[in-house]
Length: 306
Image (cartoon, rainbow, N blue to C red; front, side, top):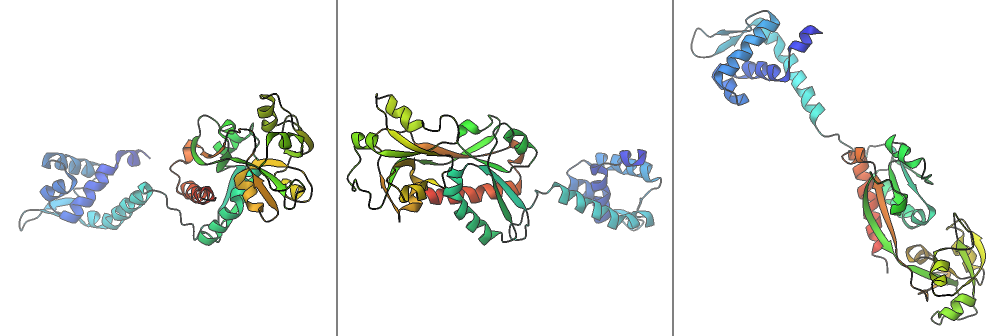
């Protein structure tokens, strides 16, 4: 190990340059160092290998490698090639990859992006697998750090401040009712809205009070929430089969317009912003970067929907 510690990349490059140029002046120029510095390196190489390595040519300027130096030529070339490969950026070939990516996200963004994202991944990376997991916000920082989760998609309130984030899209809210609803298709006014029976999607907190109810309460109003569910996926079919109204992100409801009519809610609601987050250690990772580009591409297409 002591002899390994004696050698360094500068000496390996010097040995390679001398083997190639067989001239101390030319080798020094090749490495961008002075001739005295090159001579000092050659002296150090001779000390390490215990022999001259290069002798002056008797027929002119230059040096001739000794048999030992010639024997070192392929080994030095291979070592330098390996070091060059080591220092090259990591490559990721999606077409050949069999990696499983894990994306943590709730039902709402999963329904809006999931099918399009999978279709795009299958087109570009047929051997890859995609797993959606429900985020447990208390465990998510450790899962991101340990590469158990590659990407988190959601609202910024669920993200760790040290993560890197990028906005995917903002979404307005719409109120849905079934096709053929007895109230007709007139614009929703606040009185009709409050009197109608509503379905509320609530995954935490009071199951019968949400952001719409808080917006109404600020105006001294109250709506009639008669049913609650924790699942975004069950809301559209429930609304399509009942006389319930339901207020959800428009991008989600837009996928169910064959069975639902959509209306502007008669109360002002702040838009929902969905972002993508990743751990800083993966910012330069080729595979993670590729996945982020696919998600952003799908989200951009979703943002162009009417």
